[in-house]
Length: 255
Image (cartoon, rainbow, N blue to C red; front, side, top):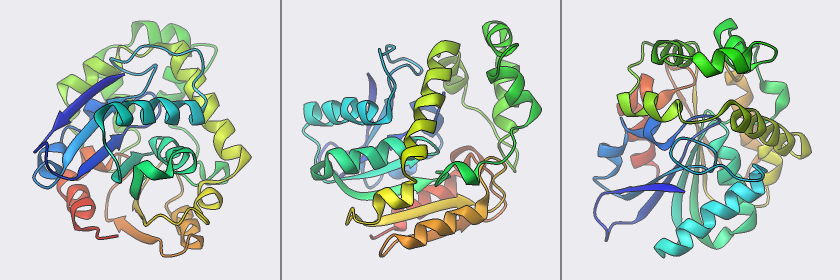
């Protein structure tokens, strides 16, 4: 797994987990702010970006691979931040290795299938059969940027490194990851999984998210002690739409 570490080695650790088909470099706009307080660990999940493909992308196994990285780094009691389906891996990490997670922050993480909104046309063209595999193979940086912009509510600037890393992910891996994520929330919703976890939880949602119904974030209120924060005028990509607000929310959370 590709791992990048920023900040003071003696600072408390914080793990950033990206969403489906994304890469760790998507977090670039918020890392400098977070690194003022934390030792920031950013990963590319297996099958994504600079990490090698895997035989299975089942969410529990993705969590196990992430745990292996944290064990190797000697990191414990982390603040774990998951974006979108990265929140599923973060949740599975709580389920399988609760010793590693001190606090959990979910950013734009859809709680279950019922909250999913219709996909924009460009996303369907890039990711769905029958044309998805063909378009994926010839996709340009411009198409990647337009695809990301379709899930945002505010103008975004995609880091150059992120666009290059996104091109590394294969269509086959992307579709397998999507299917595995779907299986995970079909079995039990994220709030159901976290109700008895006993971990401090902060949920951050854009109030204009076009991918997941923003109102669905209130399902997390079923988790004892959970805090919910909406970012005004923000869609699905808070780290690209309002990096300052997202970093502030993560830094200010004293869960």
